[in-house]
Image (cartoon, rainbow, N blue to C red):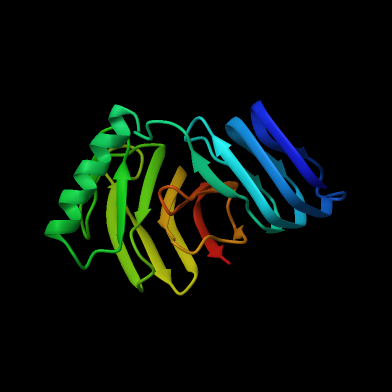
Length: 217
C-alpha cells in the first residue's frame, strides 16, 4: 500500500486475523493517517513501514495482539496529553519514589489503593496489578500478599534480566506493565496484548497469570 492520506478516521489501523491464517507481508509506503485512536492488530506479521505517520487525537495508541515483526508508524498527538486524575496521581507518587529510591528499577503498584510496593513489603490484595519498569537494569523485587483468607501470606517476585521480565506468585492477577523504552520495540512475547506509547517512551503490556515470563525484542 502506498501514497494514501486519511483524515477524520476513528481508528488508524485495524486488522483481525487468526493464528492459522495471519495477515502477513504488507508493505506500507508514504501513508499519512489522522485518527482519533491508534487501532488494533490481531495476528499480523512481517509488516514494513516507510514514511508512515499516524496523528492521534487521544492517547489511545496502536495495540498489537499476537503480532510478529511489525514496524510501527511515526506517531504524533494533537491533544493536551494529560492522563486522568488517577494516572497523574500515580505518576506523582512514582516521581517521589524515584527520588527517594534512585536504585529501584521495578515498582509494583496496587491501582485500587495507589499503593507503591517495595522490597519485603506486605501489600493488600488486588486482582488488578500494575508494575512499572523504570529502566533495563538487572533487578528483582519480592513482596508478600494475602493468600486468600487473610491469615496466610504468599510471596510475589518480579525480576528483570536482559530483555526478560519474570513474575512468580501463587495467586492469579491481571497485570499491566509500564516498561520504559526509548528505542521502540518489534515484539513483546508472553503477554496477552501490548502497545508502544512513543509519547511516553513506554511499552504497555497486559498479561493475566501468576507465573510467566515476558520477552521484549
